[in-house]
Each structure stands twice: as structure tokens, then as C-alpha cells.
Length: 146
Image 1 (tube, rainbow, N blue to C red):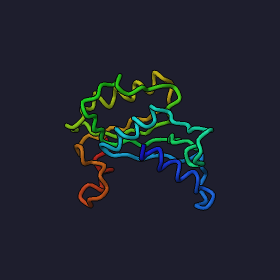
Image 2 (image 1 turned 60 degrees about the vertical axis):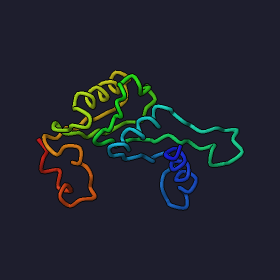
Image 3 (image 1 turned 180 degrees about the vertical axis):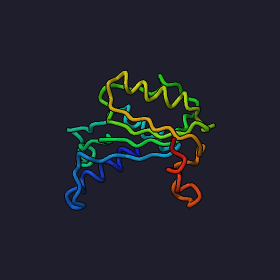
Image 4 (image 1 turned 90 degrees about the vertical axis):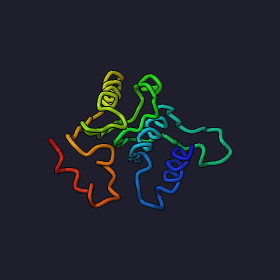
């Protein structure tokens, strides 16, 4: 609900912030990957009859960048991957231990089967923290590219 509300807030203030309200995406790392995928699968386009103007707007991302899945033991079928999902760029590493590469590859494959544009980028090393840009030690992750 917080993720959808954040998207709605950005959309309602898009003119003030000089951004296109129909080109708002989300980037998520670890649990953020999971949260964004769950949010997108719900396809919350807003309620045109809502009293609050904010709730009339879409709480659905226009694109997703998903890195280092934390899957909380979810199976692929737990996400309702459907053809209306926004396009996604997915990052992972071969040495990821939190969510094995097979799980991330299966998510990308489910996108493809639903005819949703997806690009899966796999790096050799870096583990779960490879895309955590907060630390200068991992901020140079492109050097791990294959």
C-alpha cells in the first residue's frame, strides 16, 4: 500500500515536479524487488470513484528495475505474473545465495511467457549485496560483468 501511495503522490505532483506522470518506475533491491513485483502483480490502476483525488490515480509502476531478489520462500506461482505487467530490468549474480539464480531466471521466463518485456542481467560475482550502492566497496559492481 505504501508503494502504491508513493506512486500516486508522485503522479499528483508530476506537473509541479516537471515529470511525465506516465513514465514513473520503481527500483527495488532485495525486499524492494519482492515488494515492487507484488505491487505490480496487483495492477492497482486506482479507483475513479474514490473521494480522495490521490486514490483515483494509478498506484502501478510504468517500469521496474529489480535487483537481488529476496523471495521470502515464495514460489513463482505466488506472484500473479500477467500480460499487463510493466517492463522489467532484472539484475542478479551467479553466486547469489539469498535467491538462487534459477528462481530469478524463472521469474524472467514467466515475464516472457506473459509477453512482458524483460531483460535479465546476470553477473558472475557479487552475491546479494552486489547492487547495494550505499557502500563504495560494492559501487563498482560493473567490473564483475561477464
